Image 1 (cartoon, rainbow, N blue to C red):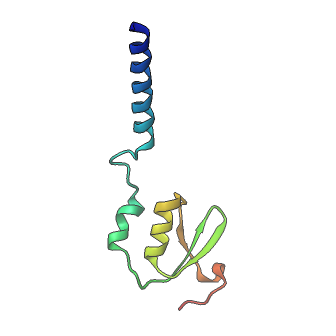
Image 2: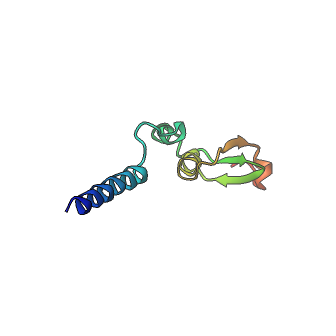
Image 3: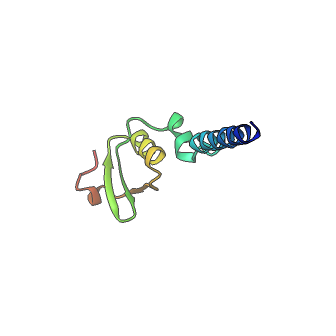
Length: 86
């Protein structure tokens, strides 16, 4: 009987550990995620991240992608995205 309680306790601890590891850590929201509420939805932007160029239809779209993917997008020249400034 003691052995089964011991194993039950181990399983509960492992379950709680797995649950805690799968939850997002509170307070680690990136600055890009916080900035979405104040972005300009009408500002098209060309951005670069690790030698990759991407055109975003708005600054908000770039911040959203940064928030979701973790890529460090920085504003770049429109010519690098093969578009002219709108």
